[in-house]
Length: 115
Length: 445
Image (cartoon, rainbow over all chains, first blue to last red):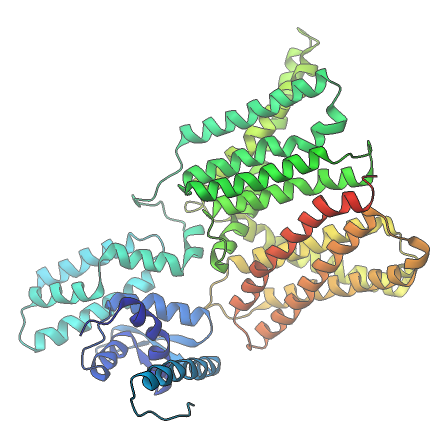
């Protein structure tokens, strides 16, 4: 399935924050997780994840540290910050509202209350 | 396997050609590429096949580096390496010279008309920026290929300003006319800023670029002015024995042309050099922030102990406005070279001390003024100085709060940056008020 580019872009921030909320991770693993979760439906240009991660770091939503992979290669690990968690909660409410509204039109059975 | 290593090396070199991509970004991307290649190989692909697919998934190098440039536009400013062909439109020397000559020519014509009609002191001083800064704005509009409707919008704002300040019936040598002389160049500078950003002034990062540009421009212009002063001084010295009238020609004809042309040349230099040499404004800021902090703390203590603020001379208020403006500049250019990853340090403490001391000093002065407002009364000068002072004070109080939060690790530096760039419209509106509203209110006196 081809998902609209703008929609993928809008999803990117909450998706990355939500994945990092499950635990510290790094670029390649985050993308693998996105593919797994969406059964490959959400296709990302892999490289674009990095400017996004750097933006989230600049905004203080994630913090980053150089570590190393099991093979001894330098690897940059990202971790969500407190303010990232708060931002995730805000985005979660927004997505649930969108979800509920469209769901109401299309008669999907959805939880009435978000959060 | 060797060919795979070579191809990874080539790809890495191509990525690093992006001016905003650092070695550590390349490390991060290369790590990703390698992991993807290994995963694909383990599902049975050869090294070359795996490499091709992994590179495709990462995206086209151009798009990727452009995305890095968008996120890290600060890096474009202080890169020490020479750029390798970037595909970006470099400001051409000839076009720049054309605009510099145009600005110089307009000012020369204005000088000649003013001196022949004895208008030097009535309209020339007021209008001179109108002959220079719109030319600079036009230069940037051309450089950024601004769409025509937007150009027309900017042009009509300039025309509105030009017509208004010239039809207002100012009293010769009055306070409101002096306020216009002082504020019109700043109003036009905002137009230059709009053109510099190609009209994209809504984003905070772009506005920060404009602030960086302004700081660097001021430094380049000062340097050009120093060089020009030496040149003209020596010219006069050498030629006066042969032709005594040369002093007059230099000061009335050559000096104004050079001063106007220098405005465009300095702007071109900033654009051409921004990616080649380290930015100067942050360097100067680093030197002067501690010195200003010491001066301000001493001043606060001296004012408070001596009680001199109780009998504060109101003429000094403009001086205090300048002081607060300098402190804001120290904050802005201090943070303009910071990266998000940098943790708060000693410089931020010094910055906070300087800002806090400036706020206390200014609060003392304002308090003394407001308790005596009855005996002072309002004049155009006082309203302009007090209004600016209030605007600067609010900016600094919030800056101090954000600096304290930054030091406590409670707010990223981007909050402070956004506050400063978000505050620019406040200055623009205030300048417009001083230019357009104060003269009629105070009867053009």
